[in-house]
Image (tube, rainbow, N blue to C red):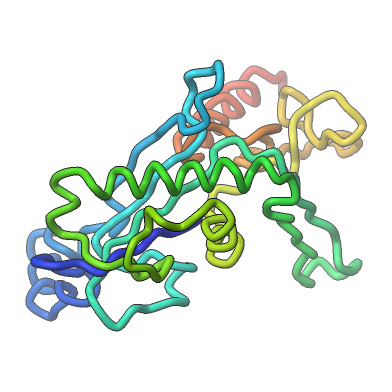
Length: 237
């Protein structure tokens, strides 16, 4: 996901301004207020490439604070962030064993944007985000761009936006497919989620999805777990 971040005016930053002791007491007493926020409360699904399919190809996730590189970048001023997430990336990464020791972290290479079309989708998504920023009520509260740093985002060409995509993109926390279901040589589990070549072992999580779904993975993973429980219950003991 790639962030576009604006300095805000006549507004507040949820993290910088509202995570106060008084609001913490409010959350403890009533379970509401700023501490009940997930901070990324703004979302949308868009088709930005204009292809024949009407299905969305980007998801937007934003909120009134800095949502940049999982908190690695922390602006010294109130900001609003809108992250753009590609829903159907063509690039495929790898996860490999680093050693026979199961405690050793694996070698993970996401290979982001190895397929140039993925970067093009992101640039189109950022253009859509910039267009939304001109609309009410956003326009009344958004000031100068913090990322990409610019007095006029609309004047940035595609090359500049792609450079921003490659510099500031981060994982969207919804990985799938490392134990993909299928029937081919590279498949890990069958349609009953049983691991090929290993008896009495199933994988029941988002890793069995053979392709990235169009959105968040939580609800589909619950569905997979319910289906797996049903299949296990049907199996003779």
